[in-house]
Length: 132
Image (cartoon, rainbow, N blue to C red; front, top):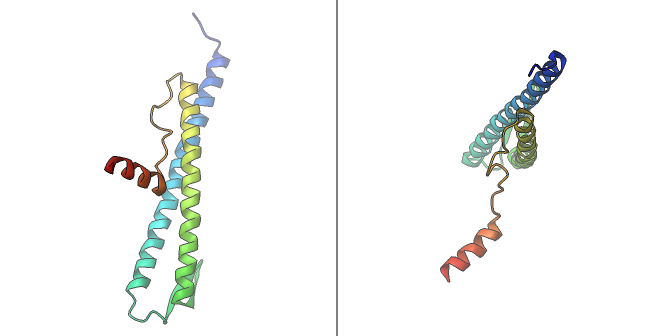
């Protein structure tokens, strides 16, 4: 059975666009994760600092500013929380994008891809049940 060439081109363009969305989301997650790791390293370096009340040089864009350690730590913690939230949101969106791509390709939805980790409270309840 011959297919309409215009239909095939539209289909291929749609699949390619969905695949590009998936790759872009994955790259954005990687980039944010690199930033999160840098923040984690900076927080660790501040914790090891012998003078907890001293000042730290912080880079904002293309300039350095000297800030108190406490303020720097707080800024890094807030940034970490924001990055964690952004990464989690991107991962949720990625699941949807991958499923759309698979659907467009005629593949079955990934099994186990929509799992979410248990919360600390859920883990405590499971451990209580297991301990009997």
